[in-house]
Length: 303
Image 1: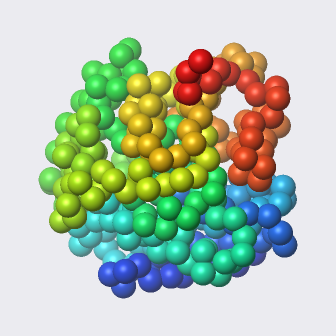
Image 2: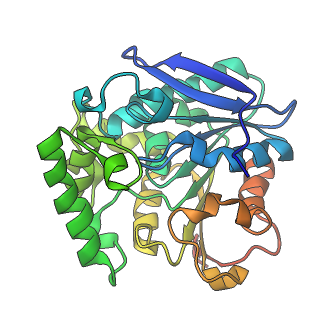
């Protein structure tokens, strides 16, 4: 079936004036949830999940980062935007908008892949009540799955920046690698080390960047899939350690835990997991807890 359409479209200006666009699925009560996408993934990819979550009792906002999807208002080759811009400017604009529009409702967030990193760079993340991340990490190559690390390094850290140098941006849509990507994002991805603040290119003070995630006081559920080559246990925990002020739970789920052959980095948001994986996110976002029969194992906190 075609993805459910949002009931409302919105546009909000980031601090530097760049227009960020997205959609809203309304619910009369319950929390307001802002969904932060993965790199090079359009917001519409999450439409079925957003529509379903709205039906459970949450107002849900999805949005595209600058240069992606509906927020691509200038040629992508003219954008310098990196991951810090997506978090400090774009995620902040939408979180702040949601907080202003629904001031009396709990503000929550979902972050997929880099989205779980970007949302913590937004100043308004210190107002979040609950967070769910899925496959969230910041692409430090030594954390990749050891069986695929060499191929992934060649693809994402050598080939992608080389092509970007040629075109001025990464032409992902033309190559069948999701969406086109601004060169700043490619630069950040390809150069990422064990500490993001010392690897990423930004005019902001590294100490300030590193402290932003720690200001979040939310209850945070980090969901990792054991067959996700990007978000290994080490990669997920590396990002989770930055959220030092949050009440953190790191849950690892294997495909066999829910009787499927694979899940990987992207499939959590596929409709076939409406009965198995989606209720985990809903229970956390709506009630701040996991169901009693939660699949998988909790690796943090230990003991």
